[in-house]
Length: 76
Image (cartoon, rainbow, N blue to C red; front, side):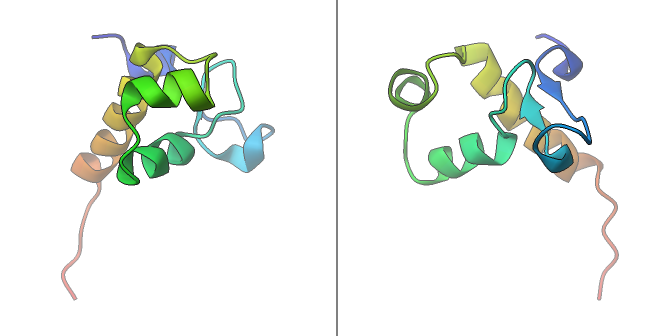
C-alpha cells in the first residue's frame, strides 16, 4: 500500500487547499461523492477522470478513512 502522501496532496494554492489527487485538480471529495452516488471505481476512471488510476481512487478512500479514524470526537 502506497503512502497517502504519494497520491494525495494538500496545497493552499491549489483548489483552495482542498485535498486533491496529486498532480491533478481532482478533489478527494468529488471522488467520494461519486462513490456515494453508486458510481463504481472503474466508472470513475473511465467516465469521469481518465487521468486517475485505481490506486488514486483507493487513496481517496483511505484518506477519508484516515481522517475519520484519527479525528478526536467530543461527546455533546
